[in-house]
Length: 373
Ligand SMILES: [Zn+2]
Image (spheres, rainbow, N blue to C red):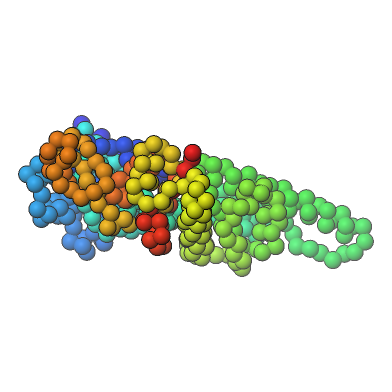
């Protein structure tokens, strides 16, 4: 019986995927866009994807057999499972256990396939890091809408009415009473928005907030947030009139992405400084790998690692840095793997945070980490 699981791309669900492992190279990972037209344009049929992408790759006899079996399981899974709409997908197929996982991605991806002893989640991890979900409050004195911006789209999560009247000029006592009542109304309105926002951030594990709308109201709102929440505000965007949610999304997305770059630069610097003073940090593949094995890594920063070689032995499971050659333990031929993907797997297994670097990491040899101890 084929078991198909659709995942929502949370870190916990990523962890579940990284746990999928085998001794053989029998785990298939597929990337494809959510838009079927785009797939057809690439002359790919979803159910035929594994063979179309890997059929000509010069696989070994064993690998070919794994591909055939995975392909059949994939076909069944696709035919039996109606896919929800998403901009992009990553799928992991384990034919030995008859399991298929599908995880939504925040961007459209080109069709790609990988056959290995574990899922190839590096591209997925990078996308989810670069396009991290955030909350949007779009508000003026009349109404507020709270959105979740995640997985390449924006979705309404809550709506509140403020109905706060404009200032009026009357003068005298009635003016003061009026202003006091108005202040009170604004206060309650803001507190209600913050409560809803906090609920959303908790349920979706969100760290970033974009504020858009009436400048004055946004200031009132931010003043009433706790310091921790204020620190999570990544943009304040004055917007006049009623905007389409898609415009709110496109205008706030750049600010959220900029925050991601700031975070990467901060971490990179923190590691270099900590390492220079002999503190809790490691740099370079060798030391970082050792720290990952010891589960000492608090926060990993990793680049492409294109020129770092990593091998695994199908015979005895030995793995490590270095070129693929004859296994020193059992004498079988080892095969090359993506070093960055291995680091990612270990980081997830050790509950480390992962930052995928877009910038240059030459000064730390492509990979580094802040340590727990
Ligand atoms: Zn071996």
